[in-house]
Image (cartoon, rainbow over all chains, first blue to last red; front, side):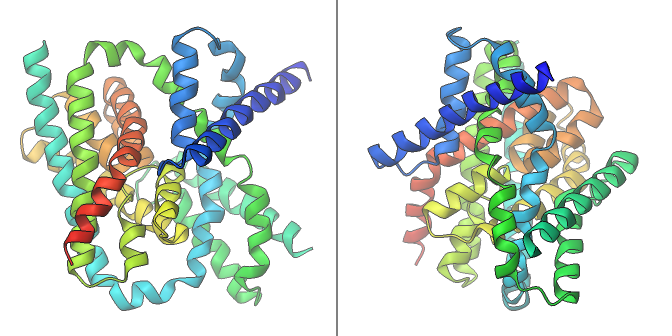
Length: 119
Length: 228
């Protein structure tokens, strides 16, 4: 019971950061999602020790464990877009394969080279 | 009533496919793709249109925003790695994020896809909450973006490790970074199976790739726009 209340309080804190980040992005007219800004804000507050890990980790650990759940209803929206895959399937496939392989190799090679330099 | 049914159906599909995935841990047993396929099949069979499912979607995704903000916690827990391998991590992930967007966007544009589909495919290398929001800014279609994200993640998990070995990338830090940058959460799960260091680096790369992709998106959209 106490843990549940604690987690709900932590969720409220996460919500406040998310809400404030969205407000900031909208007010400043930035072409960046509020949730990305929210991650940067929380990370900064953790590093500055303004927010301690124990103030949020109960809620974040549970939410992140089930983060994939939230993706499911979004993907159900595909129901209305089947035609796109029918019309452009091959182009989409080529674009997805190429844009996965190219950066995969680039990141692998570059980080391996930088790692050797650094150590 | 339909909304309650939709929520129960979604929960059941998620819990069932999650159990299946945790048991076999195969990249093709993707929880998002399988769950969505089951739910769509049931909705179609029961003749429930998507518009009747949408209210349930809004209720269920209400916590996605705060949950995504929570990604700062793993980033913070691994700050030691960030300090130690800072240049290798930031440099390569930034490069990878930009390359992924440009190659996907340019190929989609040159392949003659409509503008909203091009904008939907652009951010598909990063985890769904970031990708969907980035796509939304440029009038992409969230559901399509989600599908492209899952397709990319599945592809990366299936062949990423093999491809890296083939070209001689054996360093665990480099392998983790590559898998996390290109195939987000699914790549991270695969990297974790290779080892703890690979998994930690992939987790970091996935979150940083989201941030870089959001930051580079205006540039990528502009360049893709130049291509006709």
